[in-house]
Image (cartoon, rainbow, N blue to C red; front, side):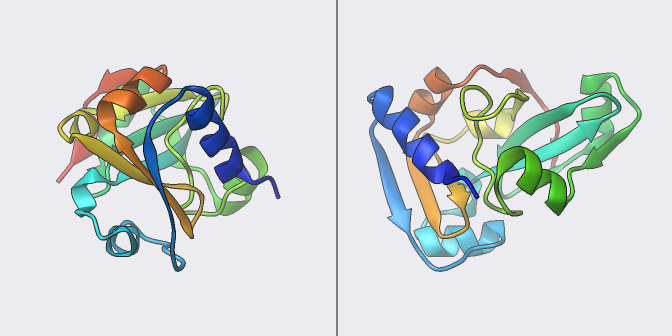
Length: 156
């Protein structure tokens, strides 16, 4: 298994971005991650790998929210949509469920879609490729690191 967290940290260091790195007990859910980080759940970046008819896409939204599949289908203009399964997460992203960091290139070769909810916080926290490793950084810095499409696809 590839150490994705090392790639994420290397990328942040290469880009000279300030961040906080935390190692903690296993956090498989957004709620557990927020508790382990001692941060509000809203700043968590929930990253989801979705498969449309033709390819995979990354969607990132506040960990306090859930994905509105109907809106995602409209965004992708594709009625066929499903969540990646554990085998696909491991095969394509080298992570288990709950550990997917919110990055397209150069970490992952997928289109990246950011929900408006990410932009409302001054910082973003996420599991960095491992459910025991987290990163917290300023949202402004994060936005400079990623190529993304800003959309609204969350629901309360």
